Amino acid sequence: MPYNEELADKVREVLHEEAGLTEKQMFGGLAFMLNGNMACGVVGEELMVRVGPDNYQAALGERYTRPMDFTGRPLKGMVYVEEDAILEDLNGWVNRGVEFAGTLPPK
Image 1 (cartoon, rainbow, N blue to C red):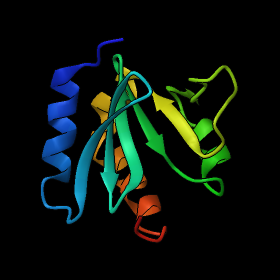
Image 2: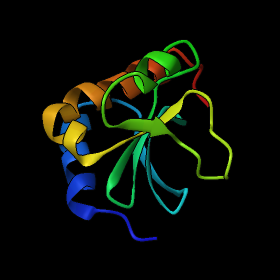
Image 3: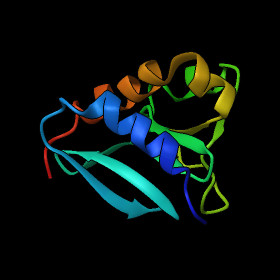
């Protein structure tokens, strides 16, 4: 599945000052890794965000989100964010992923 290159470029703009940033093809899309830990990514037209298990239910309670179920089972701690939410607050969603990834030890 191809991913939205324009959205990927916007995520790059948000992350341009983050130290330890790398990109990796994952889940049929593009993942943005901080010190080897996935923070967020783009799959198709959606943003995927690693919010972590403690913030998972709260993120799912927000409009325009749903469980990331790439494998057919929800991946706890990861959500898909639809286009309407991306338009409203891309920086906020990307930063949630950065914050969680920052709590993990470097790989």
